[in-house]
Image (cartoon, rainbow, N blue to C red; front, side, top):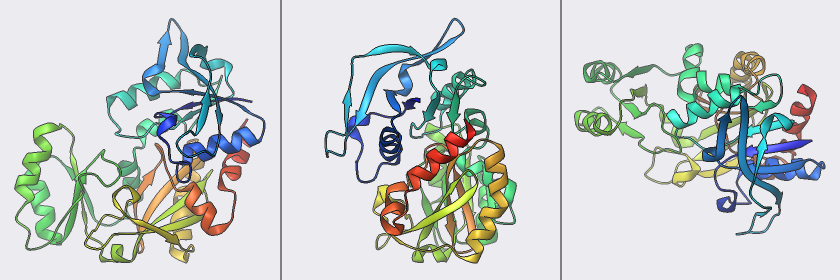
Length: 310
């Protein structure tokens, strides 16, 4: 097959951690041809969805993860699969890319389905499953956020479309910084904020569960660094081996059918204690850590699911 990856610069990836690299590596091992282009190289030209990029061969060489060909323009309808793997922020640039990739429907399989990536961003899709999530409010209005904090006392405040743990604050009952933080966030962004009840279980880890075509295939636990409430590996969280609990399976069985129906082949959800906190569909991570801990080829499971859809 011909496979295109829309992603951030391939030369910057960590070959031992990057999920996009692992997906490309598995596709290459199956004999598929790879093509790389960046989000800024995607275009809609007079009825055609095109990209300017390079043929790619990946290699497990630190600092030199790919051999790239000459820059050329391609028609993405000639490809079997396009991977939407650019990292957030989920901004208007990202949203526009999903609109353009929508034009490939019926010609090329885009993974994850861009229509539902656009309509189900990570911190909003969980609102469909309020019985699985901690108390949550999404608002820009300061009085609304203050009322939530007054009710629950100890809360997490973060930007609605943030990622990687950036801009995440814990505000306990004694904290006096809510108004200042609200001024800071609203001063540079028109986005609402999301505020959730703080879950003390985060000290034991924030579990990343990976689902393939709606079915849980394993999990890793991300333990916050000392003095941190954020467990994201971008900010020092430590991955460790962990199994799936009965509650994890209940959560996955509740959300799995919707993910499968909406073409979300590779999904990573975040679970703290008994609560679902995020459903990550834009550019989820965790494949390589899970493969090392469990000895299972997760990338192969993802490609099996894609090939079955084709």
